[in-house]
Picture 1 (cartoon, helix red, strand yellow):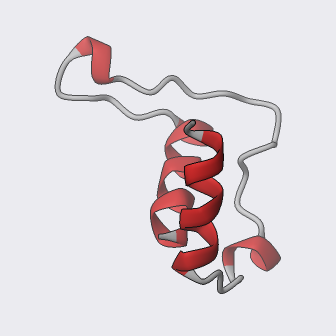
Picture 2 (cartoon, one colour):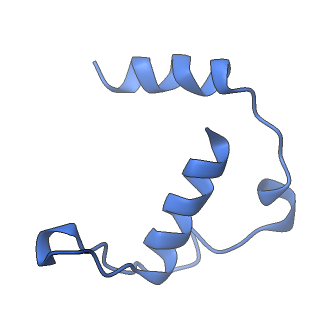
Length: 58
């Protein structure tokens, strides 16, 4: 699941053209979503991320 998060962070950092205009993800500058060697190499168990996703999606 963390791999999906990292891909989404890349989309936020660089932007991504979607199939339709509403699917586009605009790039946000500022460095918050830049590649980071330490963060990119973390191993986070899906169960931990799933619990956090459940909490924030209520």
